[in-house]
Amino acid sequence: MSDLQRYFIPSENWTDNKVTITGDDVHHIARVMRSHTGEEIICNHPDGYAAVCRITDIEKDTVYTIISKWLEESSESPIDVTIAQGLPKSDKMEFVLQKGAELGAASFIPVQTDRSVTVWDQKKTDKKLKRYSKIIKEASEQSHRNKIPRIQKVMSTTELATDSGNYQIKLFAYEEEAKNEVFQSLGTAISKISRGDRVLLVIGPEGGFSGREADVLKQNEFIPVRLGPRILRTETASLYALASISYHFEELRWT
Image 1: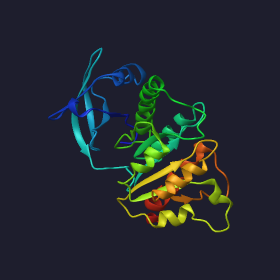
Image 2 (image 1 turned 45 degrees about the vertical axis):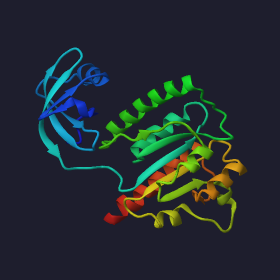
Image 3 (image 1 turned 180 degrees about the vertical axis):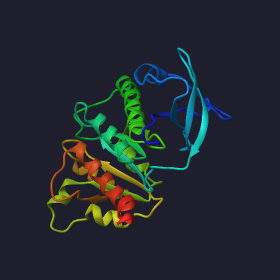
Image 4 (image 1 turned 30 degrees about the vertical axis):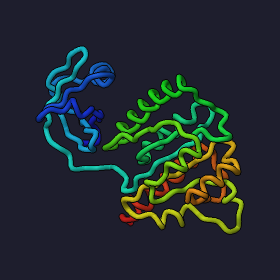
């Protein structure tokens, strides 16, 4: 089934054994993939279920399908990881979201930090979140995710810290840890994670965290961690962590 195109379909478009496709996906099916009636695609339900569906009709604004069979597979990570990304410059956030979705992140939180060069007003926020949602959806389809990662509202570091009570593990990548002889490594932190845990990892922008922010995070039980001996770019840090978690919980069991 890996060669079949996947689409995430809203729950209201599922009725009995039929799935109706609307919106931008219609253009993709009809014009980009040039699909025809009788061909199969995979439709993902927001609850994480997936089904092979056969196209029965293609109209201008709607594609009609019927469910051929339900799939048992799931590619979701056993660890629920939220990446709280300090707002970076230019289009680096798009890179973080795209690759983070591919690597299994469950959620993203944009964070307006003390040292973020980029500042979002409400108009810019609404526009960017709409674009980011599309990027995450497309990355999830490409990587055969069962669920689309959530993208939450923009928060300050203080708001994030005080609203973090629902996470079992709270970490922040702190460049000062990479310089110390005695440090908390990401590997040590990962060894304390259990399957099913909710993990919150905070990544600073290009200039890192201010001393004030580091204090606020520590006061709210966030653990500073070192992501290897080298200083990573902000758009690399979360990917390093997600790949490490994936390897530990999804690949080591097979070795």
